[in-house]
Length: 254
Image 1 (cartoon, rainbow, N blue to C red):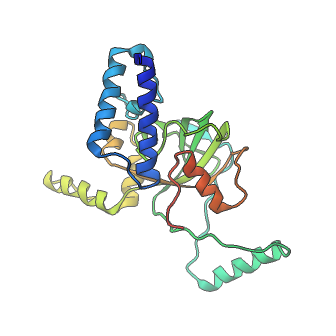
Image 2: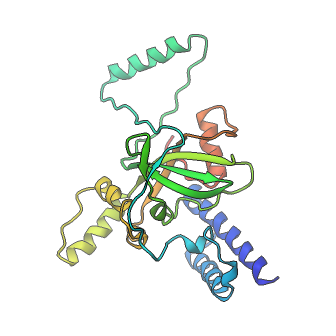
Image 3: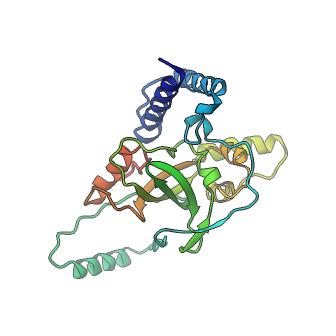
């Protein structure tokens, strides 16, 4: 097997292991074995720089900060979701849906609310090309350099059944354990502690240096789609499973 073939094989293996770990929560190898695969990939790419590509798992974290965050239009407007703290309002919402669809059986899918920052990921021919904040719903900040550092987010979708152009919607967030870890570091340095996970997440995805964002260990759940001609599912549960089949981290709490 020549270097080009081995590099392609390693990239595919690492992507599959990423899906098993981050999406399915069923690791197939140990952390040490994973690290060895990644080190072999990096070593081969260093020896053969002509074979290096931006979608390689080794290239998640860029080594140069961006000058500023560009404003980019969403392919489909990214609307916010209404909140309610009232059971009566929830019942009234259900009644409105029933009136709109009088001849359709109504089934509900309920997911846990993740307290993070709404983002949109754009994949072209299976490759991650852009990540955007919601912004004003029409235009968002280009945070591609930072979303690439989030291990949950595949740089390349698995398989060949995905739409050629797909705009995936979801939430980037930070776990409570990660907040504790970061605050321990800040306390040792006599720096002000972070107040909550959402504020840290919102600030982290907007930093100009991706190396700084990578140190925060952000996560993501996907739950919807904007542009997505070619999505095969006709209900939400199947849609979430379809996202998982592409290697995307759909919310597990359904």
